Every structure is written in structure tokens, then in C-alpha cells.
Length: 353
Image 1 (cartoon, rainbow, N blue to C red):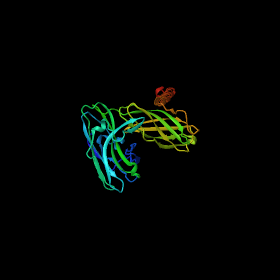
Image 2 (tube, rainbow, N blue to C red):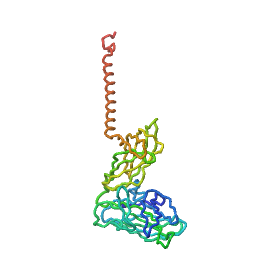
Image 3 (cartoon, helix red, strand yellow):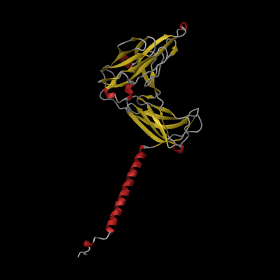
């Protein structure tokens, strides 16, 4: 909920930089989490300055605007736009539509609006930044009382442009950076977020590098941005390796299915290996373990990993507990029988003088 806000002037950035030579068309960039160093003559950046107090423990809220509100709610978020170049920059500011398709967060062309972006108002349409200057921008999100339930997506963009090398051809160089917005609308509390990890496949890429691909299904009611890692153990000669990070960029809307990929060390032998794969999105984290073997031939897939079933683990624990109980009862029974066979003390046999 958009309650008390905490200032975050020096925390995680959301920064995307695209330098694209196109005929009057702004570049479409894949917004990424964390910080990316600006580069080029017209470099700009954008980051959140605050997050809701009830989302401090949500890593996604440190980079994106992620919230749930009731219809008719109006709230604000503050962002900062900064100039990383040595020259003044005239920055255009606006909100545009976005969506999720084929496991990726996608951006509407240019300034194409959607329902959510039409609810977003910025207090500045332009900003002139001196070299290495910065300015705060307030975004007001006004959700109509008639808004139906559901999650919506948009991006708050900051954009600069300059003539390209050939002015006669009308080429414009455009850089734009943005902050994703994930807004769920509906009465009551926030709907649940969850996902399941499915089949895990080992592969060797065309150049022979081992790779793992894991199927994921979004089983909750909020979008997820997947991150994670895999560690390998019990390999040939008891080798261990990792952790290896999951390749970022997989985003799934509610009900969607997709996959995540992990590239491993190039010199990793075929196996078999024991693995532990942990995936997370915001506050939600799941781990799957099992055994896999990589194929020998480059550009081929191996057999699906053999997964450690949670039920099997539960049965193993139950079996171990049963064995411990049985051993304890057996030892106790033997001690009881030994005490019964032991001769009685003299005073019990009438031998006292």
C-alpha cells in the first residue's frame, strides 16, 4: 500500500541506456535491475528516491515501482534523473505503456500509452540538467474509482536526443532510461505471489559450455522477475562448483510459463552432479535439488534432471525417525529383560542374620 515512504537517495538504481541511430524513432530498451554505468555523450540515468515502508524487505521495490492499491487511490513516488555527461542535457519526461510477453517485460513503441500510463502524471515534462547535474521528479498515480481488478504495467521514461552524424538523412540519436511500474488494483489486501520450478534440463552450448535451463510457472496473482543461482556438488572426484548466477531478464505475468538459464564454468566435466537451484522474485524464494549429467557433444541436450522429491525427503526423514524409535525401544526392552534375569538382593531371599 502507498503508506509512509522512506527516502533512498543513494540506494539501488534502475538504469537503462540505449544509443540508437534511427529515423526519428526513440530506442526501445530492456529495463534492467540494479545499476548500469552510463556511457556515451548523452548519458542520463534515473533511479527511485523512496519506497513504501511496508516493502523495504522486497528487493524488487528497490528498483521498480511495485504496489497494490484499492480503486480510487491516489499516491506519489519520487524519482531522480541525473546527467552523467560533461555537457548540459535537455531531458524529456513521460510515462508510456508496457506489458509482459514470452517471458520478457516489453515496452510500447515511443510514447504509446496504456491504461496505467494514462493514470501517471509527472510534475515536469522536461528538465534541463547541467553537466553531472540531477533533479527530482514527482510521479502522481491516480487510480480511478471505476478501475477493474488486475495488474497493469508501465514505464516512467527520461529521454534525450541529438542529431546524428548525417543531418541530411534526418538521423536522430536517442537515449532513454526508465523505471518499470507494476501496479495491482483491487479491493482488500494484496494478492499472493508464488511460482513453481518445473523440469530442469542440462545442455552444452554450441561452443561446448555447460548450461542449465529450468522451466518456471507463475502460480500467483502478481508478476514475477526471476533471479537466482545454482551450486554444483558431488561431481567427478568429489568436485564442487558455483554458485553460478541465473541469467536475468525472465519476467512472467500471472498464469504464464517460461524458463530461466544458467551458464556454468566452461571446464565443468559432464558429471553426474548434484545440484541445488534457488530462484527468487522479491520476497518469494524456492529451491529444487537433484542430480544431472551434461551431454558430451556441443550443441546438444542431456536427459532431464532427476529431482529430489519433497515427498521422498519427508519419507526419508520419517523412516529415519522410525528407525531411531525402533532402536530406542529395542535397547530399552533388552535392558528390561536383563534387569529381570539379575539375581535378587540377599535381603529379598531371607538371608539376613
